[in-house]
Length: 161
Image (cartoon, rainbow, N blue to C red; front, side, top):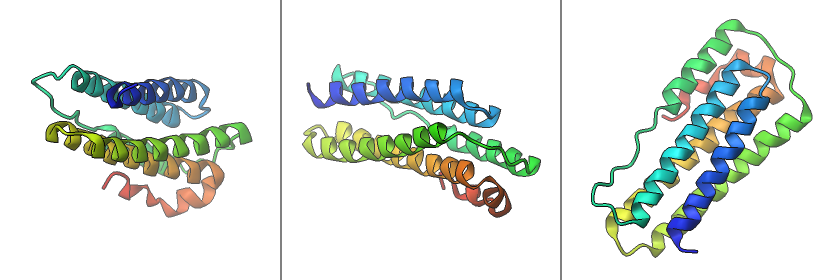
């Protein structure tokens, strides 16, 4: 499996995982964020697919998830409602953080293997996006583990900055 196929596999698995989290989320805002993350994984998949075909028009997708996530978190903060979450959900969020960290490291490694400078830059850009996904998920985990404290602190303003 070459670097592009490997990256496409990671992104497809991420999409499926986030769609499952969106379905199982017991909070509409979190469901929306997970759906946005799934859609971001689709964008990444398509980017790697283009790279694999040496497409001449390759531009990295624009990330909108952070702007929208901040709005969702702001709404959650405004509502000041502390939800309770099952341990299984919390474990899923921890797994998602590890998955994003893994993807980040893999894309850095694969970028080093690239001889085409444009492909290398795109691998690096998507690696940075995976790191931001991790940051977003860490905020979600903090919220589900300690909703009252999270709402009081509202540190989500720095997401994706």
